[in-house]
Image 1 (cartoon, rainbow over the protein chains, first blue to last red):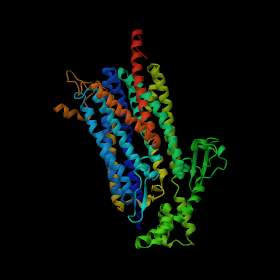
Image 2 (cartoon, chains in turn orange, blue):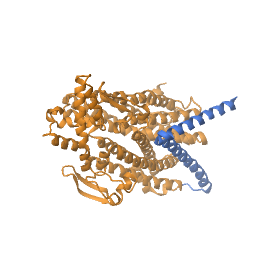
Image 3 (cartoon, one colour):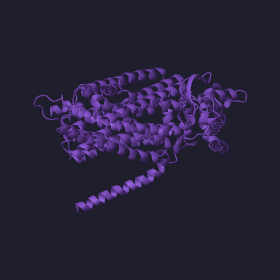
Image 4 (cartoon, chains in turn brown, red):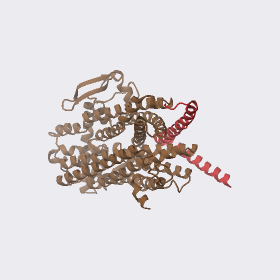
Length: 544
Length: 67
């Protein structure tokens, strides 16, 4: 644990993970949401026995299939990245973090991957009810997959269910129940899953609006628009509610993230009238906002659900971190002594006394003379404390604006879905071409919200990989800069090609719609519907 | 026999649902909310689709094509 990794390698590792995660998350939310929308359409088919709903399920299922395949391809690399680029992190928390990842692979991913094949090719082989069960299992599997990943992420945000063992020098399980019922994991799973529902709804609604504007596939488009708009408006309310819950949980678990998210520099001692910053330009050096527009009386009830709770500002949080840093330095020195001599019980006792602040000692390493905590003395301690305390705060500018872009996109979609559902329920969508155009051109909004949501979550956790326990700068592997640059460029090219392939296939098959695939006396597609043949399986089916 | 199997299956599902509700209600309120919420979203959206078909039939009978 004495080794400090080249800061450039750490930054490149962070860039690579951010790049792969953000690329991957272009595919995930559509899979999470569209799978349940397919299940809804198929439910209506099984209940009403109207063939149009089968055609709808098969057509949207084809677009789901394209997205699913590319989502899987981009997700697999990320699990390996923990080992290749974040080996210190994997060593430190692998016993805990690896468990939900393994369950995700063995249970949820295998489940969804198995049943997705049955869903595509089982239309002729299963009864309608059995096929419906399969479609629900695909939807459930996709979302369970997200659940286990977010349980793992929840541990990084608010470590519960494990503690550090000085004998093995890694974190080990204390409670599996604590891990899976972590409040951060719970709220984040529901927030992310429902954000997927919103994404699926917007996708279906926008493509349906395109058909309605072009007077194509009217029966399919009107029904799809109806389902998507209702699905979307309820999901939007849900995602905003869970966003609020997540903020409330983070206010306790990660006060630094919350302060950065709202650009609160000084603690307002009058919580009732504290202003919520609608717009601000934060200045980290000056520790203030150089420009801000605030709305009084909003901040405290919004963040704490009370009117009297004082919300600590960044400057106060830095001061509050200093005693933890001092304790953390003591813990790290005691841990080093105990590691040199395992019979040194006084070192172990000292470590146990300060172990909860160990991470802050880790964080102080980068500011200690020669990065050696043993060289911290009374003369240089104030400087080390100041620098380390300053490092406990994430990038305020990024956090503040990423959060606001996500929220703005979320509320814009809620308004759009509300109008869309209202006019759809009145059966008047075709009389409002402006609404259809706005729906079509808003197709990118959920992806923007999802990407900036992840930036908010992960940037706000900095400077930690495991909040309060393991700083990011010691978590990476000791690769060379050249290796990292090479692999980063490789990933950027590969993943960009995936995005291009996805967009090409999605545009192609969405423009084609459910009927244009049929030429002359061609045999019905798999399942007997108009659009049952999965796009990526068409050639192999034709050869049969 | 078929009725008995149906009854037993329904009873098992009910028991499982109650067990999940009690456990999740205590330890995982947001997980429970997701189960309930997702079910509700699906049912309301499906009901919206069914409503569309009845509206469609009414409009067809009235000779209205554009909505």
